[in-house]
Image (cartoon, rainbow, N blue to C red; front, side, top):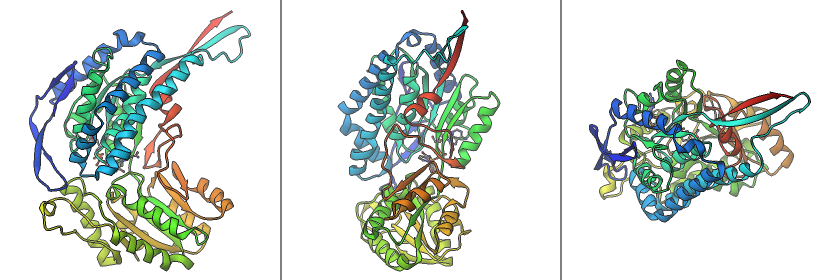
Length: 471
Ligand code: NAD
């Protein structure tokens, strides 16, 4: 594992172990960047802002992003293998979601940019009488990108691509638990004929380490972060001193609402997917489901049966995270009812040393129980009945988070009444995680600040500037 700083690969720094979550075994080591290396990375990225990159047109940057996408596709299997090795996720998931989405992240911003350069982005002339006004889009400068372990390449590139699209330079810090695909990305970018030092990569932990040193660095102009809400608060405090803009995609405690008029089979199937994809370690996963009382028993029975039948799921990312999830399950078992799972699976092979948790369905817990209020980020879903639409909305909207929600109903009027009334950034109706990369993506309340996706990302990663010429 290597840093990529100042155009060179470098393995300096005290190493920490890289652990395979499938078996719990140490499989490698990752060098932790020193403060000095972080300084060098930020310095090189600042210097690059004054280099040839500043003169590249949107069309040239668009072609560069396509070359990066080509580079990932050219080493597709290597990327898939690296993502699976770090996260333990099933190959099918990495090969159909993580890596193709990383490619799509570069291509979609490349396409948006190509369209922009032709559509005269630089001329907003509101009036023209007496003065000519136009708008120039400038990069923010050096952008720090700090990303989590659950969808490592997907979430890193979701920010790196639009940041580069708008002419910024980037210093990236992937999660210390999943650094491998970021290393491959640095190799791809090194070969993609971009000007020197436009992209830097440093590895390391978060607090009192590379993550913190980077986000509090006076040479960093903006911070794009995905991770826990608590980490977001500390990064915001660090950025506040120099008033650096932040874009935050944070935690969630996403609700599903199942109405009695829904196609129940589809609702069960969709909820199995929304609760247990990547063993619940996706920020958009559903952790609370409210079911209209007449269909509660039927839905709960079918969901529990489905959870017991799930095969081919992956482990938790680390021992610490597994222990956090199991702590929630212990308390939940004491205070409520476990309809499926609740424990650790036994394999009788090397996987018994890994960080596994069974897909779990809970019910009977009060709404203020930690397992119903706090983000668990594991394969755990809690079911509760409701009687009216108003009650369902109040239950879904309670709590500190507001990332995503799903509504299952056969009534089109209800769908349009309920979905916009949810206090979330994204509401799905009769589906889950269906994504169009141009749509606004983000959360409200403790789930985030700002929106990314399509034009929203291009807006965040640039400063519009007005020039006014008196005629
Ligand atoms: P985390 O906050 O622990 O870590 C995320 C990144 O921040 C890592 O690279 C880490 O090293 C770094 N970091 C940690 N402390 C830091 C500090 N003080 N200063 C600077 N950097 C620091 O999150 P995680 O455990 O890696 O990821 C899981 C969390 O991410 C969950 O809460 C999940 O909901 C959230 N998430 C949100 C979205 C979204 O789009 N809203 C997507 C994926 C994950």
